[in-house]
Length: 215
Image (cartoon, rainbow, N blue to C red; front, side, top):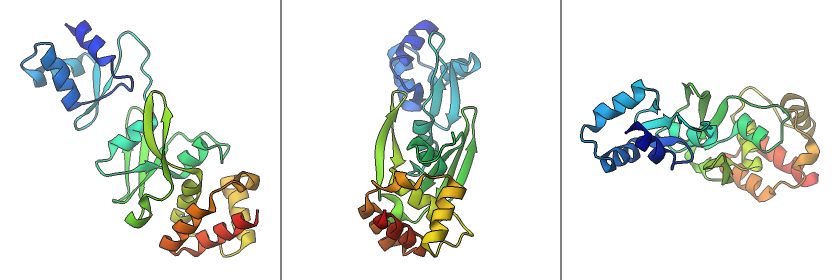
């Protein structure tokens, strides 16, 4: 019967299964003691709990590739989107590969260490949450991520202890701290930055906006 379960689970290409889906699969195959069977599947490592109500399907027949991006959207019970260093790397704005998946949420900051990797979430005011976010696709999964304009705004806005009161200091931070190529900012949508500044009232964002307008 485990082979039948495996075949059903393979229909879910992300390999991330919630409890309701798993229960439906087991019920359709005639299982009555659902929770007992789930314990059995965990013992056999066919499924792996990742948070309450969610499991990763460790396929017995194909290579299991998990979308860290989708998992980031799921792990937190509150809304979130990928941003900061991970999003900057995703959009090719910084040269480094970022292994920790960084995200933003209107709720309190939090971090998870899982077998898949480390996922961290920084708090941002709810009024800034929906500006400049988009849906991207990777590894058979769609996920919510900051566009490049939003990602760099979040990084500058949420980085504490930096004074960026002039064009020169902003360029120095972008080029030497973040290792961003200034030319990559030329096609930025300044409307997103302007909206971000209007709500945040951050002087740092104002300096960034003025810099990009001049490029």
